[in-house]
Length: 488
Image (cartoon, rainbow, N blue to C red; front, side, top):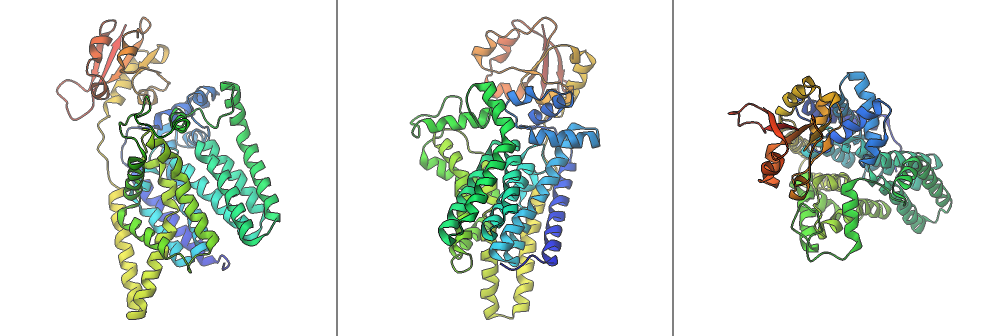
């Protein structure tokens, strides 16, 4: 373990600056807030007025909405605040990854790992969206880098910071519990390897700090649900429910996929890892893992392997029961595969340098790495097709019709982002629509394309008790998804 040098600081800063530039440009392209973004923004809007409870009851952890709130006060826009938070913290995730890889595999391989994280397209896109991944990846990687430093240097300060940052990671996403589990596991492996017993006390202290930071949310969930749970996030709860039974012979109720079983789950996980990593990078990572012996301390190799495999284990188990495994669930594993890719690249350069002139090999290898980075940037930084623009016109019309003082029911929370208040959710299922009746004067907003895919007969149900009052965009415009507004 060579000491950290000023050169390392410059490299880490340059990699973070590259990541920031790529993510900022991607975030600057006009977009409609989608996926889970509306839930985070609506929680931040409500927190602005002192209401955290509504968002917490909806399963949103408070860390990311808090950063949205802070940046929104600076920028005057909640969507812009959410995007800037993701861009900033997603870019900074490069620094702890470089730091831990620098300590494990050396500066050369760590630089490759940091460059890949800065330029992999999926990370650029996710870190430029109004999503919690950017903040979580930064906190998760920082906590694990501190755990590594604490375990290998017997540093109580590093352990304490590991517990604190890991607690913040949990306040951002429920997977922050992995930070506590990872540092305890690392400590156990370090004790088995080196017998430095005082780090056990440091590990317990870090665990206590993690619990102290996480306690307010854990206690709140206990008061709300009557039992101890790490989250109220619906998707996580449904995934956790799959562990209560053996891998299914039929998918779990409510799952949006019909595929299940261990074979499919493992194949889907590998496919998600491959496309998220870029297949050529995955090949280097696999080669680096094979070459790790002799180039990586056994403790480092075991820790990285546990981080890669351990994080995807629960999603694979859930997929085996029919719960869909998203690419977002494998991204933290992908982050800690990148040091292995750096090992393979460094080994290839060393091997080639024995046969050809080292200077020419270094130039050629740097050029090849640059081409790979540019290819990632080109794929990751570009305008994306957006078909939901009509939601803005819909929201503006609703506000003009007094929607801020009138109940609004909507099939998508995105409507609430642009109206400025949380709508009541409605669903296309027949059993819901057969009994649904909005209060007199209330607005009902439907994203037609979404409901047409799920239940083509929804109009017959809805129009029994509600009349169509507006549609956006106007008839004849087919390039955009249409929103219909009904009213009692």
